[in-house]
Amino acid sequence: SYPMQASDDPVVRQTLAAASTRIMAIADVHGELFGDSGVEWVDAGRLLERFARSFARTVDQDGATCRIGITTQRVMLPSRYAVTMALMVNELLTNAVKYGLSEGGCDVTVDLSAADGMARLRVENAVADGNFAQIVSEGVGTDLVQAFAAQLRGSVETREADGLFQVAFEFPMPDEDE
Image 1: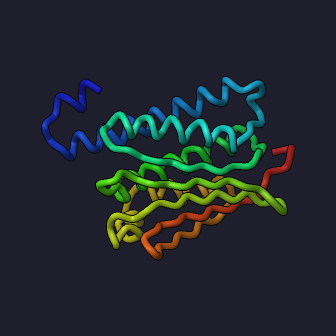
Image 2: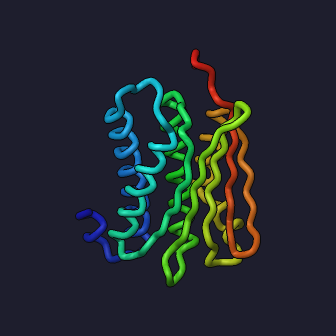
């Protein structure tokens, strides 16, 4: 964190902090994958639970409080799918913290389930700004989320209503051959 302390420019500090969070998230996902008994297939629900806790700790270290509620099922995915999904969640959580943070912190809900051959991920956060959807849609993170969704042959829908912003992602469960 030396480079972040070396600059007084708040834009530089914010950019470096966001990059640092992304790097830490990738390191956490890597550690989780190689900490599991099998590397080829992983329980994506368990991975997301651990990842969300780790992410919340990094936010809390920055002086903000972020409450992340997570509900998951056991969803077995090839490790490359799980990594892609975790990186997507990282982008969505980063947006929730960056743009959804209010004086009381941020509240985010992450849900992962699977049924009828489809995996479903929903990330929802309270909105501090009435233009949250517009602000988020203009960022690099949204482009990354769309790219991650395409990589998993899935679709992303966003919705903002009643003080909440929701991203719903759905993709076909992979075959054992994938």
